[in-house]
Length: 118
Image: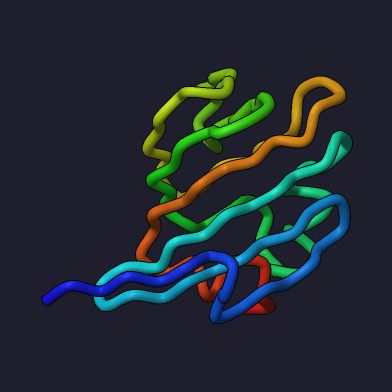
């Protein structure tokens, strides 16, 4: 099997405060491109939509532009910059660092549910 899709023809697009997400669903995988503007913070901009205290999604990601900070519920913290590839378990907060929009590619299994009410 070979499947090819364009993110320019996303299955889903949604806005959130300080951000935007486009998602293409393929068999066995969702691919998301998130654009987080300066000032975006998961706990302030997505948490009220999701209805959870921290992000409960697993992320397999790549930071294409900008910088993010991730704080796990257990206190572990990391800064991510353009070029970084990361795996992040459920139970975290994240926010944009600096004045540049962060662009993140996510190869998670369920991005079609991200930033939606639970």
